[in-house]
Length: 272
Image (cartoon, rainbow, N blue to C red; front, side, top):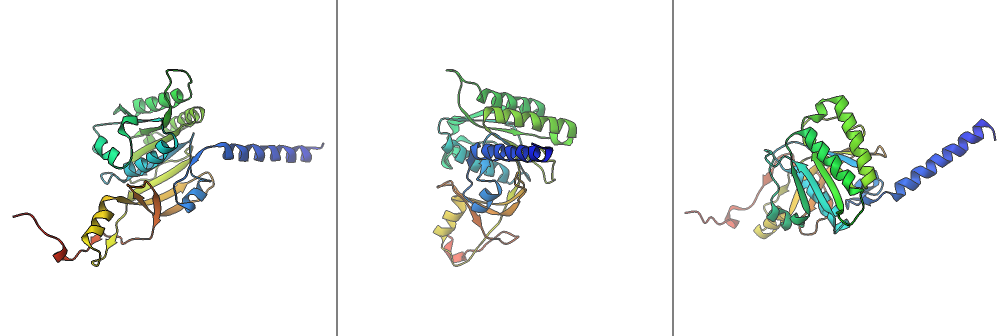
């Protein structure tokens, strides 16, 4: 066998191992075929995914909760470890609200840590614990952490991403790194990079009040930009998340400005 033949054999072995590993990896479908195609079947378990967006709208945390609901259904006995600053100005998690949108708050383990390095260390510990077996071990479905200002230190940032990726692979757990920023941050080393913001919609004046209530209180609408995937494909569009079913769906383009238009005679004021 000459060098060229050995090279071809080695190349075939690499490709076979790649496709075997890709098919072996568990993926959670996000219900939207175009997104699942970009992700080679869905969001991968055992990988670290980066999710960012602007603050104060709740879009980032809302999107994370949509993913968590799917993960919890996939792993009905698994816990979610969320390493976050509970005193953050971006809002706190509310148990009754989580239950109302189909997420069991008793399966959340909150690690209150304001220092980003300590929070990352807690993430790594949780991911490592997920790979341990024994009578006292608990099943961990996902681990979430806030990167805060960590991304502004490139050397430390890349080392952190690599350590988390190795821990996620060993524990076979979904890991989500999240943060609030309007800037694009380095995504090298992450499986995917998502940018989430609140989308707006226009309700015509012909819709009745009951329809308006159902629309406003049973769904959330986000503008989503998936700019990094393993396949190299990207996706940009609007996603609607329905609380009652937990399903995500692709919504058509909407008006750039919020415009809720309802006939005035349909509304009744109870304020004297």
